[in-house]
Image (tube, rainbow, N blue to C red):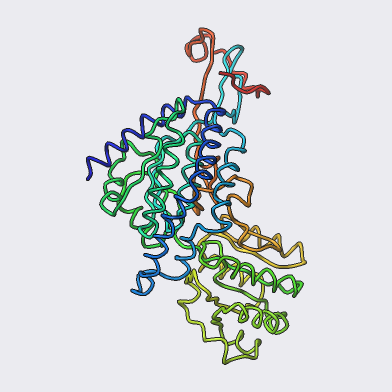
Length: 443
């Protein structure tokens, strides 16, 4: 098993070098070919997905799969068209490669450029959403990276067919060799992947906190990703109640099983009664189970419909129709709560007070902070990135929704005309000019 994975990783390394040499037009055309192939093979893909859905229902009966995860597995209806649209959205983005990030004249005819290049070979381990395979593979291809992908076992048939369709689509495209995409299966292959530090440049895990921690502690390969999505909505004293109710309900219920759905609602004590007496019925109408502290239960005046919250609720990523609520003394306590219990993913404030909004946006230590909008906006496609390979709560290289910019790195290109260091460090001690240049590097 380890040898098979190593061979896949080595093929991916060779493919990544070919992709790095491919023009932006070649990579864009490859993505359009993939989009057309997905449309032509819709029935084939949906048939495989239907088999996964049936198997998933059996897993639910056995207690091995939750209903929200089964909903994420479904590719029928608008979701299939959205998946294809996302491929074209990635292709429509500016080419992330060969972009000059800085240009500096060191001396006359001695110019230094920092230029974007692919990371290389990226391994991504993701959850039960088969559309995530297409999204991740498309981003990697556009950024010139080869991809080794491992999806959830619930989506095995869907992922196999999607990978086949994508590889068939790119089979005849020069500079896009077959090894640019490979699908791994089973935990043994994941463990083998973690040992490929010589061939794989980055691992991106998407899943539970325990899973991400396992990946981080069992590989020497750099890891980028997030563990939990414990997101908050804070309703400030200077809030518009109707606006706050709408944002709170959307943040929790618009798509409940995703990492940018709100898990905790914080409410300023000055508006707690007015807000909760509108928000609680709206949330209950959406079948949300509510858990609140004593002040919440008192302000809402519906003790029988709000369960007591425990310390564990503030740390919970439910990924389900469950929401914890806490009444706070003010914005400072809200920020403290978020920075203590949150996962540095996405947190929102609802307020008409610009000063309070500024305090919150500066003070909350999260990858995305939001003013007067739903946490559900924290998404690569919605952010205009085309799509995302995942959400990063890291502080190095990339943070928040990781689109094309997060899948490239840079190299320095120095162009001279017979220059030698002795001119500057020797007896002559010629000074550097270090002058910023307006023109970028040209191949």
